Length: 165
Image (cartoon, rainbow, N blue to C red; front, side, top):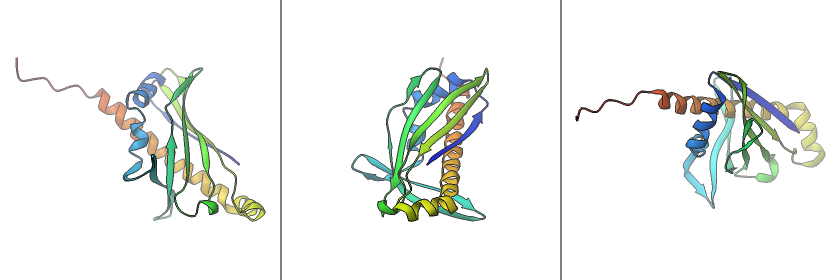
């Protein structure tokens, strides 16, 4: 199954790409619970809000360095359940940064997964789980957008002038 979600950032592509590249994926690191490191894989929570209740699951996250392809920056990412892996899909995809205009950049995630549990999983996916996957990706990308925006805004702050002449 394929899922895509995107948001827009009111910054030039180069600023967004620089924020990701200069911070060496630290925007992803901030989404990850650093107290949960296991064999080079990092643990994070992914989920979505349902009314005023948060539905989430701990997942192991794997990333590799971003790469530029054409005019887009691709950041490969994969996550899977940290418990009962056989009951949940493995999400495998890319976070993509693409220019839309002079001061507008699209941040998107394209991911794919195979529903677990054979035909029962496929039926459940058609009925509900695909929508849960979409909500989870949307939540993850919105958090990513916020972190990238923070990096860019911090970069824009003028350095305080030294009092020492």
